Image (cartoon, rainbow, N blue to C red; front, side):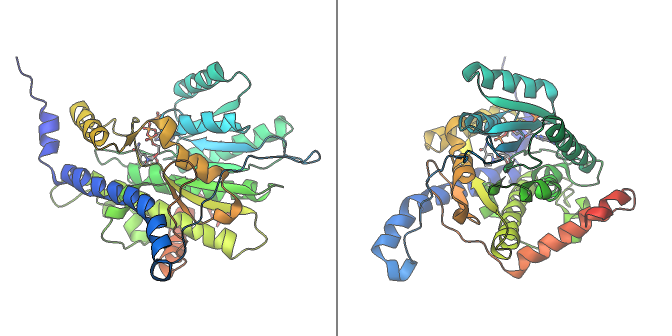
Amino acid sequence: MVVVDWEAVDMLCSLEFWRMAVCWTLSLLYSHLYLLLAPRLSALFPSLLGPTPPRFPRRRFAPGPSSPIQRPLCVVTGASSGLGAAAARALAAEGYHVILAGRNPQTLIKTIQEIKKHDQNACVEAFQVDISSIHSIMKFESSIKQWLEESNLHPSIQLLINNAGILAKSCRVTADGFDQMMETNYLGAFFLTNIMLPLLKNSPVPSRIVNVTSFTHRSVSHVDINMGNLARENLHCLSTLGKYQFAQTYEYTKFCTLLFSYELHRQHYVMDPASKVSIMAADPGAVATNIMRELPPSLKRLAFLVLGFLQLLQSPEIGVDSIIDAALAPPEASGRYFFGAKDATEAKYACGDGSTATQWRECKSYLFWSKDQPELLLLS
Ligand SMILES: NC(=O)c1ccc[n+]([C@@H]2O[C@H](COP(=O)([O-])OP(=O)(O)OC[C@H]3O[C@@H](n4cnc5c(N)ncnc54)[C@H](OP(=O)(O)O)[C@@H]3O)[C@@H](O)[C@H]2O)c1
């Protein structure tokens, strides 16, 4: 008997599915073509296209004998699966003390066991945090501070990787009143970064923030970021057709993450020469992870099949390269967008225009303004 997967049929008939299938594939192809052709075309026509984009080889952390940081400390959010788990594994192998941050203690412990199975000397810890909750992020930050004190470690962190993300199929509203995908993918990372900045700035050695974005940001056609637009009712959460525009919302969260990275770079690297914090955006490309877990399994399989056929699908171990390249690049690569494997980057300088600064201010004032949580005011 043939069983029809009506959920998959329904999705196949939706505009959002075709947006994902067509726009996202074209965006991905564009990213790969740019990576392949930009250096060649720049070398052929330097006066027309500018100099060949520089490459930033990885640099391993090498502490001096008297350095207060002998093993750099790194926080990876969404480290319980996919790219986050792969990043935690790779950074532990690079000599980092890695804090795996995630919402599910069982999967975090499982990931730690897997890392330890391959590398008994890996220095890894698990901390619980729900990135879609401001309250949970605040609790997370206090736990880290307490742990640093109790472990007699320097009160600083050297690397923050904002990786946690979801592709939500339906509109869900968080306790903070935001669209869940928007808060998980962008607002939570925004808040976590702000709250962790003092620890990053307190580092006696250069520190780094890596924001994981996506090629899908290229499909964003209309940009109007302000306080009102970040509220759930304006976040494509409820369209006139009553359907959640999940593909558009996902693209938008990744676009915001990219602008946020550029603005962080402008504020903390360009405008503040004394700052030792550098900021990178990393785009892993298409990777076979659990990111499509909410889509009907048959469509997920179809997507992997097509991407595999086009040779665009990578394993998490390969896909994570752009994140690790960004994490280990020299500080002068701050403000860059890393895409592709092994020290290949897409050259793109930070756009220090008004839109990123406005978005920054709007988001900051919105998050730090709360009648119900007056303590947040202290952070503004
Ligand atoms: N896979 C791709 O093709 C691709 C392409 C471009 C960009 N990215 C980005 O890469 C990042 C990692 O995704 P992935 O592909 O590795 O997918 P994944 O396997 O689904 O991993 C996502 C991780 O985020 C965690 N997470 C989700 N919601 C969270 C929350 N509220 N609080 C804390 N952690 C939360 C998940 O934890 P649970 O296990 O508890 O849910 C999981 O560990 C995402 O930002 C994604 O947008 C992925």
